[in-house]
Length: 512
Image (cartoon, rainbow, N blue to C red; front, side, top):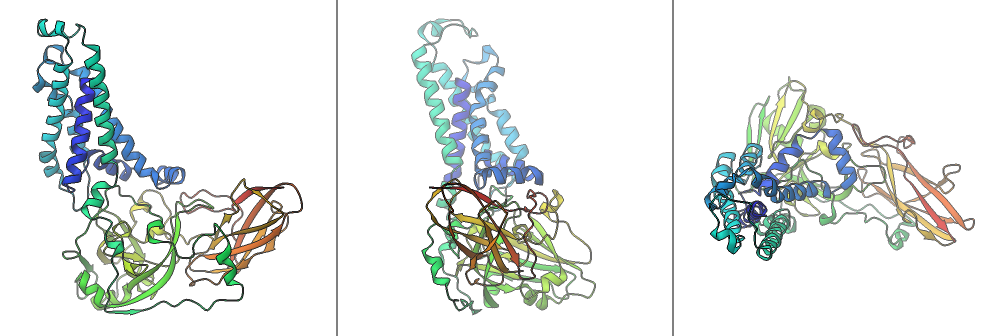
């Protein structure tokens, strides 16, 4: 019980200090950062599919709980004759401190490993002292009179029970605070996405003229919004501790095989000609019918303008992009110089939220999300090949997003009436959607759905199909799409790892 008090107190103090002094990371988060970074692509994909946004959160919560509860084991190693000396209890959480320092990994603005070791040590010492005081307080009257060094005499059960509940309560509060976003919110980590983007020159995106029948989509309850609200845009990162970059000191370094190396400030980037574009992004870990895809109105500076200012040398073949926090990716020079490749600085006409890469991220078309790194700090032009962060971990490079459809309504397993509206989204990267078909008999027959005019060639497309159920019973509904080249969505099922999911989504409904 006293060991629990030591490590639970350490957990709670660490969480509170992290909230007050954000750069001193919460130790379980720093450990989780290292563990997630060491995970293979196959394992990462499994947990992302299984848990979605909660994959990393549950990693932190689980490590925090293990951190707090480990005192029950660690205290058993403390010699009995030392247990009545509170100072000796500082040894109980010491292994946790050693593990925390050894596995510590955190990007800016978190402190270095050396600073973390120095600044966090008093927290672990304080937790140990609290455990020692709790042990002494738990001694019954008989134990107070017993010879020092006897640890087997009875303890006061009432005091012990209260101390145990208090220790677990303190540990639970520490886990809740440390694994929450409270420290980030107090630090201002979610502010940038609410700030209106200001640029010197921007070519605005325009909505395409509506086609007859487009207005009907607004009346389909449960259908995905055409533009995803910023707060609902999917988030998948390798990082648990996301970088927080100061725009006043941030620089985008451009170097390598260029005539004039650059170091662009945030202000200089916003002074360049910017373009708006509606575009969908999809995570390569997205399963068929999954929700790890979203659409936004992006604002960005053409990468070709930046590289043109630097002057790319004739021997260049590849452009490497590096981010704060250690992430990296690459594209061919031809892809980098394409007019469609942007250095994005805005999302839905606001500054990028920090979780989406503030102050700048890459935005390419015809790629999965992993090829669009956030928190850009460096662009290097090289004459060879380069394998990015996830490619080193087994994910296939340069994969075009596969044609995919999702059925939003009705829900799987729903009871329906005789007249049913089936609706959802279809996406094919930069190839566009030409046709969506729906089968209500398990794939024996197919019928064309109605398409809503797409916001751009790079977004998903809404579709709907009106169906009259033939009678009571269960019905398997499938959907498939075709891109603008006439290529049909692959019917064979394939998991996301290593090159993106394939197959058809099916739902079962029950008509009355």
